[in-house]
Image (cartoon, rainbow, N blue to C red; front, side, top):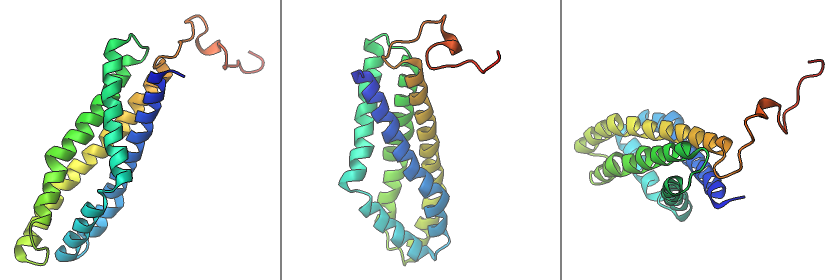
Length: 181
């Protein structure tokens, strides 16, 4: 197994894990917090935003970004089968997750933490927060899903593995013709 293949598997796994976090937030957590009284929902979100900054989350979030950077460089340095899928997967994670997080979600988290959730200003901030944070989070989930697909296609296309000769096609090693055909 090559370095590119190992990194591609790591990127696929990290992107899938992050996508799962964003998907869970988008489909369950935020909807639940939204249904709570504003002060309670904002307080709970502030607690989540503090707790999410833990070593395991940061390892996956930042580690996946570093792996994506390495894959993007390797894709341009080596003539690797599936290289454009590697570039696409890396770009989806780096732009759709890292850039969106630092440009939208994290500043919104900081703004929410700066107000008293029980105040009228806190309730207004919570409402504005939800209107901006949720779509950005959903974008991150979609970027991860597409990134997983791109990394999977890179692996299927080779990602530094020897590609099967074109003459083998769907009848080469590992493929069997149905009986009687």
